[in-house]
Image (tube, rainbow, N blue to C red; front, side, top):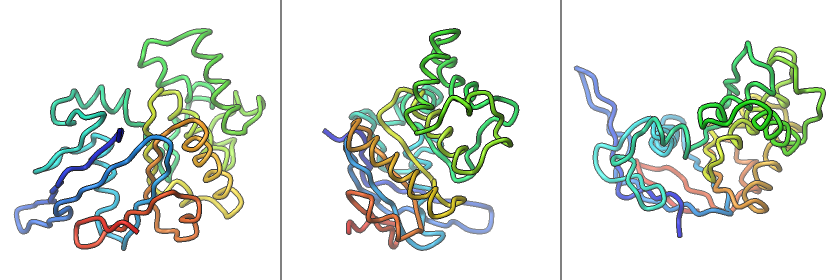
Length: 222
């Protein structure tokens, strides 16, 4: 069964001068155990589609279904906190929290605190290939590659099987991009996560299982 479905989704950006219809009947299915790429020209609506999947917006028409339930019927704050983990190009780590504290943060929102949260956070940081020496570093004391791995570890701490990544390698060099993609592939293929990434980097497509190209407000499966 698909963990996430888009069913005939429409979405527009509006102001007092014009309406820009970005998504025009978007339909797709995403399953656990696979890694997907959303591609297309700049401004084609890829990031808008990801925002709908993340519960940051609701579709004007159609539905985004998580495990068969429409996001329109959910408490979106709970959905964003517990169901849809997002990894950003700019990392978005809390600058005044250490790596360990950043990873512990979403666990605190779920009521997991103290020693239990700390031990789990250490496991997640190790899982993305980082050593104990990173635990007490602040983001500005880490390289871009280290920050992105901590961001991935933080997404794992949400304890959801859906990982959404918006240009996750956009600020990284080639070596770190490869490391991040290998981590994401491992999470999908070995741990059963559903990983969906937006990318303009065609060099990353060799890592993914399925490619959806955005064209004229719809997906064309490659």
